Image (tube, rainbow, N blue to C red; front, top):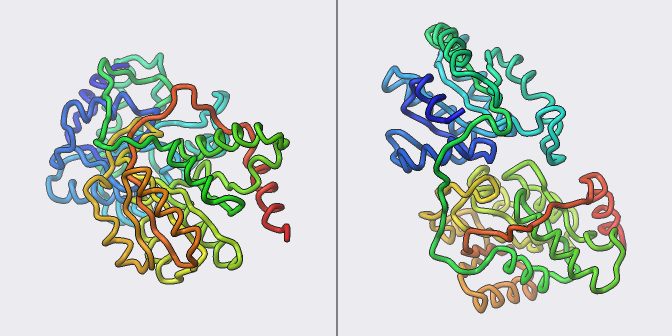
Length: 381
């Protein structure tokens, strides 16, 4: 179904959300139609942020907003759904457009499988009536359901369209760029050279995929067997925004080990409060690297708010002791060298280009195996 048909039937003209690859046709349409005009379209930091922003829109206009997200974001939105939007509290109506990753019987990545299994149950538990939008869904059946939804919305209830893989299409595909030149994969390769035998915690998305493939190529050349190739790395394949907190938890318990966190700008924005906690606890063995391409690249490339942020001031305000902002390989290597040689809480923002290899693979090591190998390596003297 063309995304314009869906939106014409819903009648909504204000959207806020966190990008999702399953909803890329919707994201492309919104940027093509509205750009980032805040009167009509706001790309938010996390899904709870979206729900609250949508509430503000309804309170000020009396109109129905729409929130788009991947189903992994339902967890972030539960608090405002239950304590703000719900009919037993303020009864603020909202339409949710949810990409269904991990849909049962549809092959997907391990971090999506359980989330996919419980998606509909979570909506039922939150008393949100939903409609599953499939490839074969007709315009007539969608219109009929929307007519029923209008009665729910009028009562101050929330409703959801759960979008299956391939259910939406749009004739245009937006290409995203920025002014920086360093590829993320090459940046990660530089990080692995300086980190040596230290521990690395990498964020969800393409950063972890690239780290995995870098280790595969390098360690294969050295003749190491599969288990040893990834022993230093914890790949945070899901749980967006939490890799720095995982790194902090390890750094506090392993003060004699140096911990490198490879983070992304979208992930940092999603749970930026983690930076304040890191600065407050100030472990001198933690190096927090934010690869900033100002885009949600792993889910299509829509822009983040990071393009206009001053991360140096943010890191200083949070209490990081040493801060580097780099956009060239020379600056990057200098910052990494200082981080390796000094024992001080360090923040490095690396400004990188948008893009990845077309043949970029995915980790073949199951998450549980990654965890076991990583923990075993930490236990070694």
